Image (cartoon, rainbow, N blue to C red):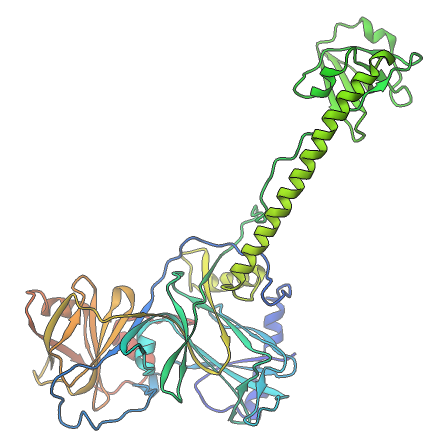
Length: 534
């Protein structure tokens, strides 16, 4: 298997590019996991919570009189605001007939099965396929990508709050490929939220809307410590089987001693029980009868009817391997007592086995239920991915990793989202002006960003008379002017403008001196640090 990892913007790979690509085999050899069944993976170490933030993105079409040209202006369905600052793909080249297990640089994983690609005619593809992949984990990347983030349900428009989004496509010889419904790709995406309120959506660019797929939940992992154990439940082992009595052999030495009834309850019912010495193992010393022993310990041996008796007095010790015996006249009663206790023991063993079987069944059912919300990756690979992230300072403050699964039925954009409404804690008539010139900002859309939870809402410029926001949030506003410059209102400037709870507010924007040249420049002005590896 050959896989090549090439960081790039979306430009078709040439044959020369493929040959120069980094061999992925060497990378994967260092991070090889036990090959799990696809949805029967190894043990996962689940955390109750994990740190992180989510993203809310939406669009609000305001009512009122539109500015000239607004009603006829059209934009692309997916319209990157700054092509120069687009979130770059990572490209992986895999052999279609072999498939691959791919780890992205941030710890996300892609499982490509054999024969996962079809051409436009529906034929299975062989040869090298370029898989283009990228993720979106903050408002800045979604903002710059220009991906629509509204969702209509029963005539009501909602705005997505996202726990992570991916775009994945496949190409061969510069032509896009389709998924094979009989061999689907699975993506285990790193997520910043472990909340269970997010559903899976796919962006249908033909119908120009988001499609609800399922309610797959997040799975969280932590690195197992050296003393970590399995998820097996500890149950109390039944008492050891009762020691059966035997008829005393008059020709063999034996002795009677006091013993703890709690350790050997069956012996208490044996009238006249004595300990007969097995001289083939431990020859009997008659002088031991004359010693004033200070302590005696009785130990069970492997055979149910054999006990080791250990006498001690100072430094002196005597050990005998023995069998409990009774006189012939007492044997019938002792045997009946043993049979009763042995039946109780066997019943206890069967009850324990039944409990363990029922528990195993419940555990299996619980595991199957978790598998419906579980990614395919096993614990070894998840732990290694987490170590990689920590080594790259991607998540150095926590020992946990949260992942969400996408089953790629179609290539394109997939999102873990929760539909939400626009903030309406305080609604104002907003005036958007250039902080230097005082002139109105000429922009098609204004983006309200709630920094404290990475939320972003879009307001059309036609009428800003119903501009709503949460007063307790750290709010910012972003816009792109018609001449391609980035305009922003910082958290502090937003708080200054809205300090007096007025119903008419003027927001003063800082406008970049020139068009955005790259992502780093844009993020610096937006006030959102780069999410490395995402």
